[in-house]
Amino acid sequence: MTDLDWVPEGIDINVPSVARTYDYLLGGAHNLAVDRRMGDQMLEVLPGARNLVRLNRAFLRRAVTHLVENGITQFIDIGSGIPTVGNVHEIAPDAKVVYVDKDPVAVAHSRLILAGVERTAVVQADLREPEDVLSRPEVTGLLDFDRPIAALMLLVVHFSPDSEDPVGYLGRYRDRLAPGSFLVISHATADRRVDTMREAADTVRRNNSKDNLVYRTHAEVTALFTGFELEEPGVTGCALWRPDGRGSISDNPDDNTQVYVGVGRKPAGGSR
Ligand SMILES: C[S@@+](CC[C@H](N)C(=O)[O-])C[C@H]1O[C@@H](n2cnc3c(N)ncnc32)[C@H](O)[C@@H]1O
Image (cartoon, rainbow, N blue to C red; front, side):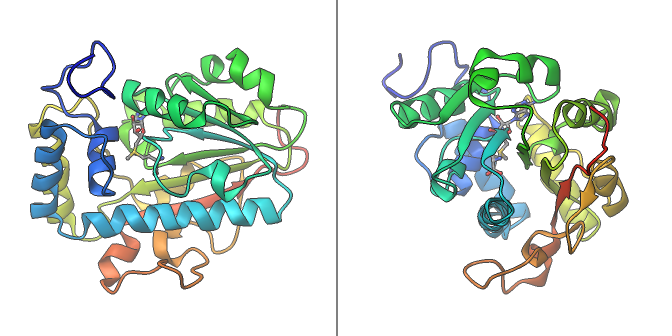
């Protein structure tokens, strides 16, 4: 351990992580100087970045609430990040929830806060390897794949370039899920503020982050839901997905649409 007792062994404290930088933007405490530098540079380029991440968390709350209202009792949150306020097991206290992230700080802190919390599990694994994620004992031991499961992938697929075939690996998740399961995605876009968003992606790249931002258009994000039926209102700006007032919408209209979100349902008769 370093003097920062929450930093796991083996972390290169000179390389920023998107998990810790996101934690910084959300006002959390699990970030290092190198992450705060990247976060501050991001804020210079995109002053609304804190709004974007808060709106994303507000969408998570609305989406999970919607799914609970639709009878979902099992969630797998992939790229779940460093736990912050309003985690899935808090929004859906009666549900079973597996948190998956590849970042060691996100995983270590998740294990810490979930120790002793029944019906939850934490797995260190990679989104891009569905067979590995879905066969982990923590996953198969907690989730019943014969019943619907909601797979949450918020602000994570946009770290995956087309060369990694996200439509393909998302399809492999879909094939394992029972009909009536859901896929929830939030994903950054450069459909608006093209230059600003290019600078934001360049900022991440210049900081030698291991993960780089890949923006997708509305049509490309919609394609990620192949094999799912989109719930109303379809793929839309984050704040415009069933806003309910409480912190759903920013005063700056650009912030409301800089991240696309969608909730898709696997139909009856969908492949398995
Ligand atoms: C921007 S944060 C989003 C956190 C949370 N999903 C949310 O929306 O509030 C992205 C998270 O995805 C994780 N991540 C990035 N690529 C990943 C991958 N290939 N597999 C698993 N996790 C990944 C990062 O470590 C980070 O914790």
